[in-house]
Structure formats: C-alpha cells, structure tokens
Length: 388
Ligand SMILES: [Ca+2]
Image 1 (tube, rainbow, N blue to C red):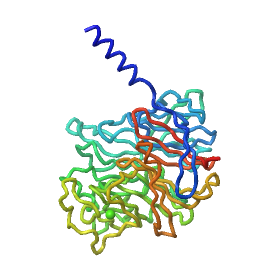
Image 2: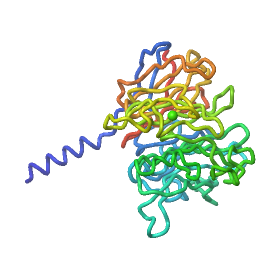
Image 3: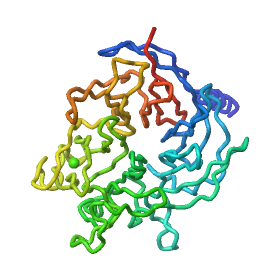
Image 4: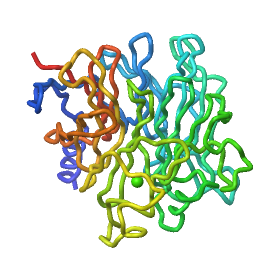
C-alpha cells in the first residue's frame, strides 16, 4: 500500500507539472513564424478581448472571466459573471467589448444558461449578458443584464455557437448552434426558433428595424432577431475588414465544416444540405450538398477540422499574411490560413498541426501580432510573430 501511495503521489506530481511554455519557430508557406506562450494555466479558455490598457479579458469555460497581463499574470475571477451551465460544450463562452468601451466600460458575455423553472432545470440555451467593468484594483461586473436568450431551451449539452461580433453600425451579431440532437436540430429550418440561427440585435437587446424579419407579422412567423438561418454550430465569426460584412464558420457533421458570408434572411441549408455525412456515415437530410433556396458555403472542409474562432489579419507585424483569414481547428488541431480574392477563398494552409493543441480562438492583438487560445485543461494564450 505504501508503495502504491508513493507511486500515486509521484504520478500526481508528474501530472501537476504545467504544460510546456512554447517559444518555437515554424516554417510556413510564406513566412517563418515564432510562436510563444504569453500565459498558461487557463482552464479551457474560450474567448479573448483586448482592453485599451493593454491587458486581455479572457473567459474560461467553467465560468470565470479574468484579466491577463501581456506578461502572463492571470488575475482573480471577476465577480458578477452570470451563472453558467458548464456541462459538455457549455459554460462561459465568448467575450466582446462594447464599441464605446472606453466611455461606457460595457462587456458582453455569451454563455450556456440553465432553465429556471423546475421542469426546465435540465434544459439550457445560449444567452448573452452585458455588464459594466469597474476600474477598481479588483474589477467587478456591475449592472449585469441579460440582453438575449435563445429560445427554446432544450436538454442538450452541445452546440451553443456563441461568437459575438459588432458591426460598424453598432449592431451585435450572436451566432448559435442547433443543439445537435436529431430530434430538434431540424429547428435550424424553423424561423420561429432560435436554433441554428445567427441573430442581430442592438446592444440593449432591442431589434433593429431593418432586420430581415423585423416585421413580426411576417408570413413565416419568424422571430425578429433572426439574421440568417440553416446553420449547424457557428463557433467562429468576424467582420471583413474591407467590406464590413459578417463572415462565419460552422461545424459540419462528419465532414462539411463551412465558411459562409451570411446575408440577411438567407438559408444556409442545415440539416437539409451539407458536404458532410452523419457520424455513422449515412447521408444527412436530402443527401445532397446543394438545393434551390439554400446558400452554398464559400469554403468547406472534408474531413472536418472542427473550426472555432476566426480573425481576418490586417496587421503589419506579419505583412505576408495581410488580408488572410485565420480559423482555429479543434478536431484536427491547427491554425488554418485561408487566402482570399474578394469573397472567394483561394487557398487553405493548415499550420501548427505539430503542436497538437486545439485552437479555440484567434484574434489580432493591438500590436498587430496574432493571438491564439488553446482549448486545454492547462490552456494557453499564444502569440505569433514573424521570426527574426
Ligand atoms: Ca450550409
């Protein structure tokens, strides 16, 4: 017994050793890059936002929001974050700053929210709340209010979508999933449900007058927040730096991850058409990859890479990558670099596969370098620079 305990202790000590801090160079198609660890020890970080003072706001999926310094110091959990349902893929997910954050200090959080009524306690759905980040030494979120709730709440721990993107007019896009289960994923085609939709709201939760279904007397009985529909699980979204239009990526089933440029009122096909199959290999929906009235993706992956966060690169730190679109891969760990010609995807370079780290979010920092979050128990913030 003593020997076993000693062995268990030794094993525990081995497992407690933090993940390696990276500082490595990699050759890529266009440029030699250096990847370094900025911070480590984050529990499944999901979203990152850059504060004007140079620090980072980072969510951890179990339900914590923290300030991380560029030197890698991780702050205490910020008080005031809504309660989250951290089962499965749920938890505290994306974070975004109000476009007028410097004046109003408003922070937006997406998360999996549990149902309130006793009969709904096993149900959940994507929700978005905002609160004011105090400027004290131990910042808190105050005046927290929920501005959006996905309806209906359902018993599933999968497919919450949840990226938050502001457009140039100050609308907030919220991307969602269809909660995965076969019995309700068809609601992605039902405009009276928020499942499998992208919605567009004002930051206070009200509906813009020019939304495609803003007229609530519309024949389809569509919910007025809906921007686009027929999505599966949209975990990546970003605003195109030149056109100002929303781009998104979403998980396919077995194969068929997509990049789309969602236009108002249009149907992106799930679960009727897809370039993937069921996990069993059987066909999905019509078994076709195209149908009238359903939009085609601008890019798709077979096999699936499991795309999550995405960012257009506009920085000067790596001029060779200017104008490219970066997508983090979870299922096939990688950073995908997509080259573009207008709205066309002309190339796809999978990078950093050797790291073997699931890339949850990608963001361009104020310093023009590219930041990544790794979806690990000992998750990291990585920074990519051009190697000397
Ligand atoms: Ca589609």
